[in-house]
Image (cartoon, rainbow, N blue to C red; front, side, top):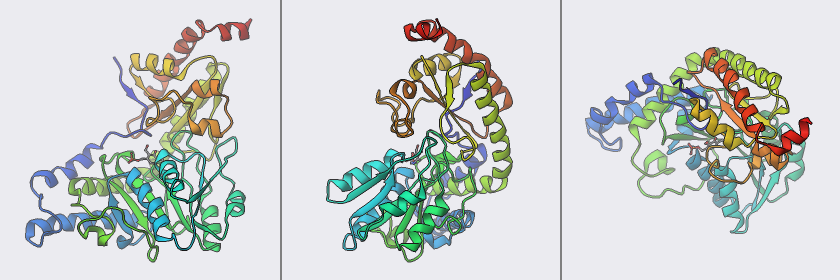
Length: 389
Ligand SMILES: Cc1ncc(COP(=O)(O)O)c(C=O)c1O
């Protein structure tokens, strides 16, 4: 049976070239980078090389990059780190309703400790209005955090504009770029961001490694206490193979991202057009243009997303309904609710996220298989029968 992986927003396969680059750092260059001997220094050199690569890729300085264990840690570090460091200055944080749980949960955690959180609404496409950000700012605001692009519906936010407002008002600005690093060009100065999170496993790098970019002069309170790694900002022995893999993944993105964006945009649009034109009662979720090149999110009325997902899985196609982190829950996705979908449509949504390995044949196969699955499921739906009568 064909096996087609279209869940790259959940995680990507590690590129074979990344794995090759990592392997020696398990068995040959295994020293602790904090050790002064040659074994340790060789590992340290590899980390610093990766740091320089990553920094250059986003227009930052190497000392502004902190390696973490992934996107969740980076987001927690950003939100709690600013909150605790600036507690004397204020207690108000502005974010959006469609952030990943790795932003929303730290915010809820802080709320219980007396911080005030404003979760801005989004429009029908999932866009935050920069004017709403401006209006929400008070003299107690210490942080604004708005994601670069949404993991479920792919909408790309007007980050540079929001950042401009944050800068004018003297407030730190963080963006969760977990879905965009390696998929869209990022320049921290052009985007006006002070703090930025990213994760290795979303750009064909390994799992368990991420970065937090912290602009020079921005103070965050560390929450990993122990050794003095990462200029005392994040204790724990470095994940050397992971960091080397992250650096290699960035190297590959540097070379291949332009072509990949072109290819994926074409495949994305083919899939969107194909679904909307062959299956009735469907809609595209997210922005039609300001959208990640690899994201397709559709709602298909009168069918359950879970049923479609399982049927697609039986045909060898992997996709998701809602975000992978919450797909075991029966609650409709908070992102689809925020863009104004009714529960029924939100429950009938599918996300296909394309990747480096995705081909035109894969998209054709989905377009051959999906209409039949939808017809079969709809033939069992009393609501659908009523609609077409
Ligand atoms: C937008 C966004 N932020 C944060 C995360 C969490 O990243 P990690 O899995 O590296 O902890 C994810 C993962 O899906 C994500 O999509």
